[in-house]
Amino acid sequence: MARRRAELRQEEILRGAAAVVARVGFARTRVADVAAELGVSTALVFYHFETKERLLSAAFLHAAEADLERLDRAVARAGPACARLRAVLRLYAPAGQAPGWTLDIDAWAEALRSPEIQDASRRLDRRWRAAIEAVICDGVAGGEFECPQPRTSAERIAAMLDGLAVATQVRRSVPRSRAARWAFEHAAREVGVEVETLVRGGPAKVAAATTAASVAHVRPASGRAPKGR
Image (cartoon, rainbow, N blue to C red; front, side, top):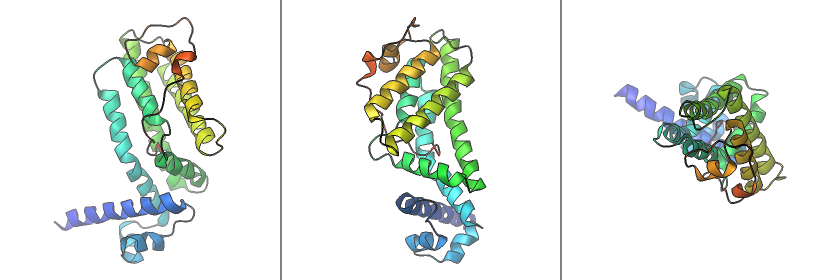
């Protein structure tokens, strides 16, 4: 029972820390702020998490869990690989206020100075890249995709999506609708299907060339929780 209470307390602290970070960012978050958010002492926070860095990296991972669960369901569900890749791309893209991407991009900056945050960010990034790779491998095995190097293609797709997120969320230099179009165009080229096939998410028709017009209406499904993720 005592162990269960400790686990619940840890989860409460992680939720509180994530809420504070979402408001003020990693760099400005103090352990005292997290304690105040929860109405507890800083000593209790340090009892569960020995350092601020460990607390924030754990909160970062905790904040990503809900979207990672959605990601796992999208990858594992039955249906054409095209439909599953489409679902993963839409989960990845920023939408609404995109709180996950705000946290993720903030974590990237903090990772330059915090090995703990860097490790958490890398772990989440590997989860997203592995999900993309798994869907591509399924598509190749089922004859839907033509992709000689699924892992490399997954890395390129993820890298482009990360860059587009910075362009849409930080620099505001690319509208989300255009970013979504580019993401689908790029992914379609990587797996060798027509863009419209990927947009529809139906059985794939291998493409000789891709076109952009059919993806103009694509919109992200949700504000991705951190990958970082």
